[in-house]
View 1 (cartoon, rainbow, N blue to C red):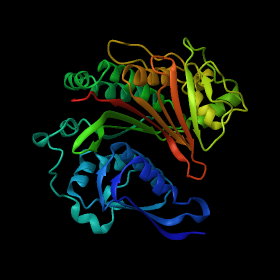
View 2 (spheres, rainbow, N blue to C red):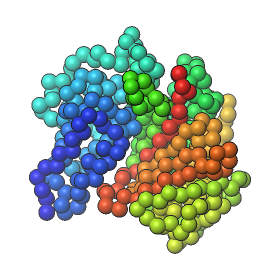
View 3 (spheres, one colour):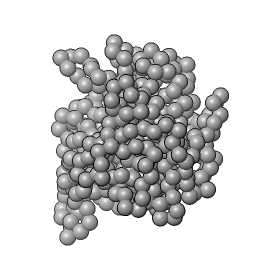
Length: 387
């Protein structure tokens, strides 16, 4: 039974919780609306990670042939943000649809207006400086072949290794700035391009932070990668049915203290030497995807390793990708790692103070929500105070 129209309005800000809560109310299946309107007219602040999340939903709706209309922000700064972060270009690249066709006819007058924000000569913050340098933005790349996968990884890796960016990272981050490219970018991308069924990958990055009494606090670099492939839990479930998902034993046993939301685990603490069996829930499979040695590569011999570009010249050991990623983000940079896939959201941060093998994990199951297409992993790395 089709209904007429559903309007998702984002007054004030577009952030991840508001994006998910609004879209949760849009039913799918026989009760799906004929058209969904994403209304940004009263949106002043846009979180770049929420923008990537919204982007992934729009790409999915367009691919399924669902009618969708976008109403642009009334705020000139917010419209310039969409331009600076290459939102129109990314959507066109991923869907083949001209951005104008997606936008409400009432907003077509905004097309062609001059950009006045996020310009190099007007940068007043680290975020604006890097945005003006066109470093940030949504960048969509196709991944049709193994050779293209390697070039995709090398291209993004190289952006984060330029002298300018390395100086910025070394100045503002706690860890070695080179490790952002060497581990974070490399592992995020090699993980994404090797997911079954993935036809494209989109990278988004930014500086973000809260505002309190006019001062930006808790600022962080955020790097997020979304692929449109098969979800992690479905991938591991299929590999388990074909034989095994344990490709190797962990060199160090990490402990994950779990905070479950919307599901019941078999225990409160999981160790990385645990191998899920067929009775494991999907939530437990998603958690286990972090464990060193847990991988679809245990049964797939057709996945070609992607050597790290530059002087490192190595490929990740089988099943070590997410393990290396969370350890670098959490242990070395003091940050957190978030993963959205299927019906789940998972966030990983440091556990017991002083214990580099202890982690705290919040793992939520959204039983009543439409399943998230593909996989989105976000690394948040704090910026040093005063940076």
